Amino acid sequence: MSTNGTRVALYSCYFGDVEPFNPGALGPGSEDGVDRFVFTDCPDLSEADLNGAILRTLPEGPHDPKVLSRIPKLCPHKVLPRDYDWYIYVDNRARLNRSVASALELIKGQFADAPVGRYFFAHQAPRDAYRELRIAYRKGFITEAEYLATRELFETNGFPKGQPLFVNTCMIQRGTDAALDAFNDTWLALFTDVCGRDQPILPYALHATGYPARVLACGLADIVDWPVFNFKQRRNWRQAKAKAAAQGA
Image (tube, rainbow, N blue to C red):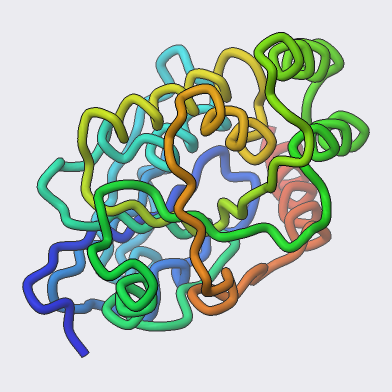
């Protein structure tokens, strides 16, 4: 199966060196019509690690690794050429489990015309953005100030409860246009300035902009395997890095 002349940017992000780099995120290797990219602040990744993917570094500048990782993830138009037909993001903790061409066939089987825009994977958990926000706060993923500011934003702007969540481990976008760029920019601005969790802020971004939520019939597991390493493995990685740094000091 090939992409039949369709040009695809398949990409992942690796920032902050907080977990092992996963060379399998972008699949086993090359595919006709597919350009593979890794965005990172770690320019010393080896050719073996990249497995043919193109290395793109983003300097820290005013942003920390958490924000830097979201620039490509949420706004591919800021960092990739605009002439790709599709943009597919795969998280570093996931592994593409099928060809890009077959993944696109799943989407086209549901959306025959496949209009320009984002295509979302439904979240299976029975909770909405408000509850997800509370969980993020209780787990320490966001500060109390972020929690209160985001909840106030939701309530002040009439964001209704019960709006579904989406999974952002893999994200698929068809092309780009002004409306899509504006939605992506809004999502990134909310993440950067209000709430440092892209999942609970996404349904609000859709509500605030009126952007359509095209929900895929296929599940995340139909496209990627996740997680390839768990939170304990990430914690052990960080502890080992910290120990090595202390010993080398």
